[in-house]
Image 1 (cartoon, helix red, strand yellow):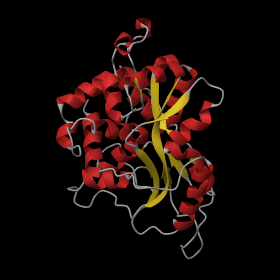
Image 2 (spheres, rainbow, N blue to C red):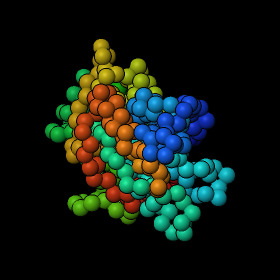
Image 3 (cartoon, rainbow, N blue to C red):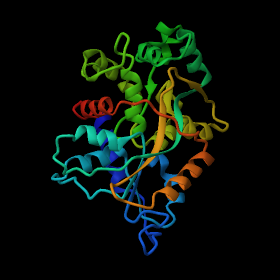
Image 4 (cartoon, rainbow, N blue to C red):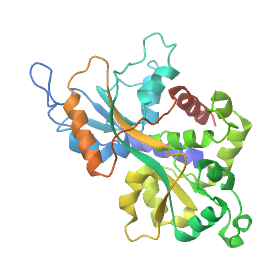
Length: 315
């Protein structure tokens, strides 16, 4: 049921996408400071996209839903590609990897411009973070995977607290995909994870253990839901730049998770589209003002992310 609700919420987000229409900000010679055409924007970056667009048309669409629209040009869900795709994570590379045998029918994007980065962190109240740190000398993705679904009494807590629920979002959101990427890295006994690990019984079991902490809707909405009703999960995984400003007077703090899983926002123009330089600069400035850090390489493997997306879609 949780997965069905998540898919319904994702469709609802797309159906209700915010579209800003206006002048396209392009000079007569086609070299304007904002590219002509529609800008697809990851909802996690909504405020930055809307502020930086300067009248260009912006559609908020979860990257996983955009991937579905673009990956099968002949499907009913297909849509013309945007002139510019602003995402968290290199979704154009995921698309290219997953559709490498599509004989040129799938849209191709130019080299991405990194904009800003923020790490995935944990939010939780003092009692739950104390339970966690008592079990994990260092809070790592591996320890989170181990304690997820464990009863409170097994962690030295009050049995009435129930199981330790790892709050998280899921694809089609970028936060959801990169959370799964961080967790699948705990499956192999040394070395980098592979598609074999993604398809393993061990990873399937981990997904089952974290299922009770799944939040529907986009990342910002899920974070608000967790902070307003922290009993719905023991802790919540989310972007630091999103979570930190939301804490305020709430009974919640943030903890880093090792190794750091980085979310990097980027802009990728459709091949041969001009006028993205100034847009990228404005987006970077907006994200910096919102608490994001200078961009760093997220170290993600597009092939592994494509495998995670495929495996998740068949659950």
